[in-house]
Length: 165
Image (cartoon, rainbow, N blue to C red; front, side, top):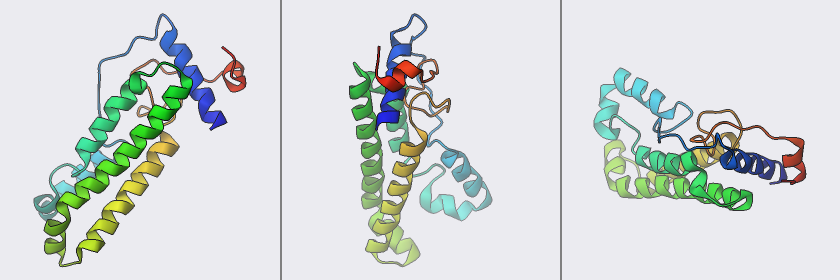
C-alpha cells in the first residue's frame, strides 16, 4: 500500500495544480485490449456473437468502472483516492459475477453444462479482471487506463514517497 499511496499523493498534487483539469470522459470498453480482442473473435467466429454478443457481456461493468477511474472517484485526498480505487475494482468484480448470474441458464443450455460451471467461469473472469486492474490500474503509471486517467499524467517524486506535501 505504501508505494501505491505515493502514486495517489502524486495524483492529488496534479489534480490540485493549474493544469489539473479533468478531461472529457472517454472509454475503450474493457481495457487492456479485452474489448478489442472480443471484436476479433466475433469477426472470426460469428456463432460466438450469436451466443455472447458483439461486445463482452460485462462491458457495461467496464464502462461504469472507467467512469470512476477517469475522475479518480472525485476524492478529496490520497487516502480517499486509494480507498475509492479499491471499491471501484471490487464493484467491477461483483458486476461481472452478477452478469454471469443473469446468464446462467442461457449459457448452461447452450453449452450443455451445469450452471455451477458457468458460475465458476464468470468468477474466474471476474477474478482475472480484478487482478488486472489492481496490477495495471494504479495512478501515475503512464498507462491510458490508469486511475485518474482523465487528469494529466503524473509522476511520483521523493516527497510523494515520503508522504510529504
